[in-house]
Length: 288
Image (cartoon, rainbow, N blue to C red; front, side, top):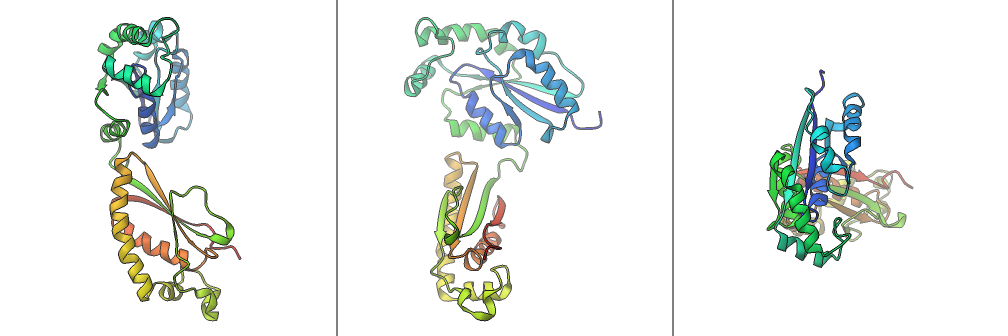
């Protein structure tokens, strides 16, 4: 095949060791992610993914003891290889006492605890999965790793150079058209000079150089940016540390046509000098 190899990461291991966190991290990296895939569907999925269009040709699959046929069929199905497939088995391990504490905090039922205690279920699962542990391509012990640290670790191991870059979405909008629901934080810039009341500027937008100059080239705007830029330089690393994959910033003025657009465009210039993936949307720029 002329196309790149299909990459399949099979995430397995102990219940409570972080498989859901890992799957979310792979999805954020652009993998097509599926949870609790039955073993009998793997071969068909692999064949389909080889012939159908699949973004990035990367799959991340969680397969574990929730599937009754998982262990009996694993060796014959999962271990089969093809020349056009790179397959990796990522096994997430964890200390028994840590798993007990996690289940106590989450108040969730262990998938194998249909009879007996959670401790007995964990011990039984550890023993049952021991043969699989020796077949794993990579083993990660998550006993002393937080979910955010696990996600960062996986991005370092499996991500492309661009995958670990933080995403910032800049959204300009007008308050009169309603608040955007997707924002993490909103700054109201209706205190800045308003070109709407300048006849020769009213019909243009914040993308116009004359409008931008009117909005930004004054003492109030300059002072605003001397405060805002250091705040963003502080906040973005904090959001990353807490495990957020992206930050959506809303900049609002009355109509979403002049001031908020000009501010977003200036912020775009500022953030483009930082190691972030940047997206800009002027939601209301064409509305009356």
